[in-house]
Image 1 (cartoon, rainbow, N blue to C red):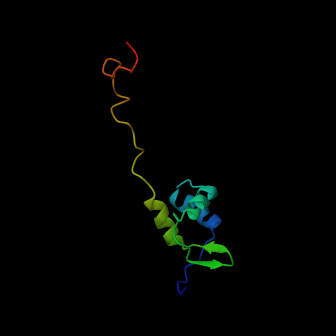
Image 2: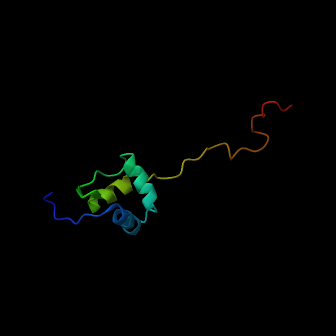
Image 3: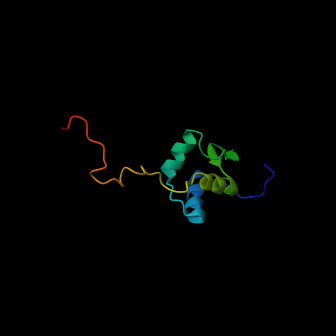
Length: 90
């Protein structure tokens, strides 16, 4: 590692994400994603402790954002007369 950027533990990475990006992730969620290989690749290890680069952590968190919550468009907007009949109801 020749980069002079300071490295962060998982706990510090989560605090960094919450503070810098405002994305509300918890350490348990980050741990779960790390176990599944869905977090940034650690920049290195100190013993068994994974260490991450702040820039990579921030980029990863921002890429996980979606523009809006998916909705079932049309289902909620129908009046009672427009809804399809329920099966088994006469």
